[in-house]
Image (cartoon, rainbow, N blue to C red; front, side, top):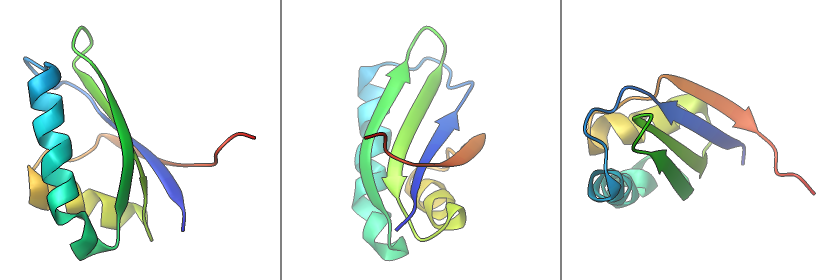
Length: 83
């Protein structure tokens, strides 16, 4: 299954609790869309969240975010793991 990294920019007042809550919401609905979230990272200073997930398509990952919390990604990139 393809691996994707997405980027959510302009997340106002971002902190650890908000990032964690959004990730938990994603985990709660991911299976409906055939998606498996692997990890997430965030920068409070920049107001950015990065999500890494396996999904059948970009659209499936976007659907998880839309259903879970409405924070759609600004960019979704298919990536490969380094060796």
